[in-house]
Each structure stands twice: as structure tokens, then as C-alpha cells.
Length: 180
Image (cartoon, rainbow, N blue to C red; front, side, top):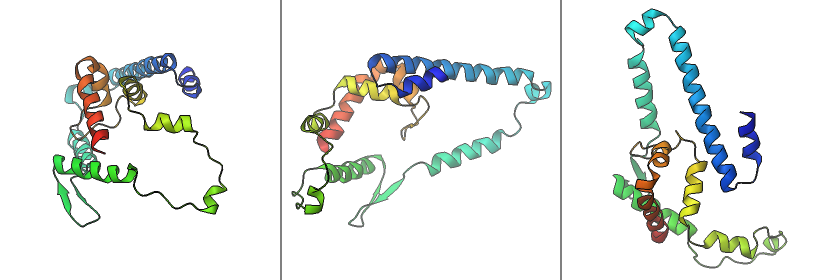
């Protein structure tokens, strides 16, 4: 755990990211082993009868999934969007408008007094096209069981089958950016 914390503080490189990924997998394995140990030490009744609270936990998980999902959206014009395709279009349009270059903002003396932090080189890096290497690094930085999509597929799946689904994911990201 200490090694993982040290690696998190280091500058992100492909080596440190790979080390972090391996340590996270090792930690998950150790946690699963510990859980198995305590299950084995529990009463024989639990092993025979199973968990009597299955219905309770199932209901909690279902409620959480419902609470964490977006079924419909209302845009600024008052239109409702329902369904995966409409929601995708709504998100793409909103964030496309949010991050597109519209009218130039008015210059303000107050803003001129603020020191610029983003250099021309940084700006160039921010607006250039995303490449596959960056997508792989981003995927490896995500928690394995975090942020499943509306289809419920976790990051662990994409990591395990990246050779198979990687091209499709990269194409989807490029299409989203292109539409924006």
C-alpha cells in the first residue's frame, strides 16, 4: 500500500503507470484472499444456508444503479431527450457547444492582470487530436471497478480485452470529439 502511494506521487510515465496497475491488481487479489479467509472462518450455517440478506443487498444494488443512471434529460430549450441515442446526441451537442470556439470573449483589464499559466505549448497539447497511447494511459489510470457505462461494462473488462475492443473504443472517442 505504501509503495502504491509513493508511485501515485511520482510523475506519470508509462513505467510508473504500469507499476501502479500491477500494484492495484495485487491489492485487489489480496483483498479477495482476505475476504475468502473470513468466509472460511465464519460459521458452518452461513456456508450451508448462504447469505439470508441476498434480497436486501440485491434491492440496494438495484436502487443504486437506478439512482446513478440518467434516463432522460431536459435541454435549455425545454426539449426532453429519452433513450441512449437521444441522450448521446444531447450530451454531444451540449459539450460541443461548451467547448467549441464561439465568439471571442471581450478583453477585460481585470483579466489582463492575471498571470497566464497555460503556455502556447500547453495549449497546443490540449487541442491536438487524442492518440491511442493517451487513451491506453487514461484507461490504466481508471479504477478497475469504477465508472461502468450505461451497459454496465467495467474498466476491468476494457483492460482485459483491450486487444479486441481497443480499436472500437478509440474510434468511438474520435467520433465523439469530431461531433463536438
